[in-house]
Image (cartoon, rainbow, N blue to C red; front, side, top):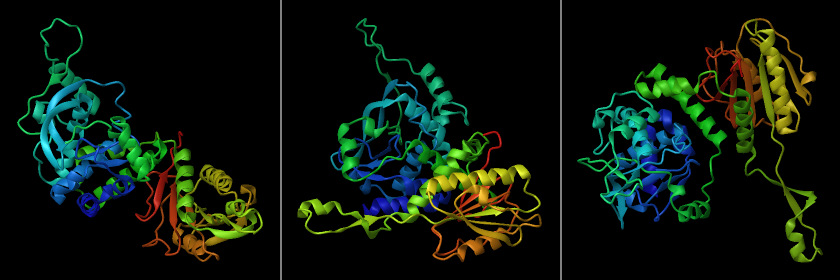
Length: 424
């Protein structure tokens, strides 16, 4: 397990913009897995112990490969593309990773062709057995669906010679075992699902996966601005993810919900208002206090500078209402431009007063919320993004969420960012 975690950290060093998705994938150790590693549609990364005998850089490359499958939702895009082919691929034999001829889904091979050029550019080298468009004399830059259709036209099923109409498996002849090409592991064997449950590897919901993809896309474009070494395919993917078709209100409220859950997780206290469930075992003769999770403490900073339109301010008030419904507790609201003009503890968005109209400096509003006592857990900043930002997140604040009303605005790398789609 130590080598697996070290390889995941190595993958983060190779592609730091993948750090969020790599950290989010729950790991499942499985001796039932017939391949070295695979990610399922729930974002869980299964690995066979034999994979630890590979070198660290190869395991890191496999991590990046599997994370790419998850980000591009390949399992959800399969849509009945179930053709299989026989291919020599990386497989597990006992405690070793070997080359073995076995059925593989043509869809997964098409997905590998779509993502491996980006992986090759990330690594700066081509791994043995890595399938690329040129492996099949196919043009670069196509989608997995387009590669699937082209492969299906080229690879005819083998003729069984028995006159049956039953469809046979096709075959791909390759000189080296392929790198990747494995189907959804949890769909293959019920034992894998039981192993995941036993190890507490929870399923990532579809919405959580969208949030992970959204944040990863932001990191990719941010990295491109500062370093300029992002593979072209990844840039196209990131721009597609961040295009104004995201259900931003759902994304925002889910981001707030996850941030709040993370902030209060594990924070419990005793209360006599709720009896302990252990009282029944004691015959009810002894009173025991129950456990209570504290209410989350959330602050909202609203940019009221001259560049914020009336419609954007109305949207800000609507989102304050959504946050109040989510936390079911009073929320600190600060409004201002280059300095705070109002600081209120509210339970109703109609209580919020918006004052401003000058320049923009969200640092002052964030400082005001950071001074609140007891300390807040989460801060939400609603702004057009034309502002300087603090160099780092306030130390005692668990998370900061920036809601950008203008997609061209800026946000700090240490914050979670949600870009508003005016059409959504």
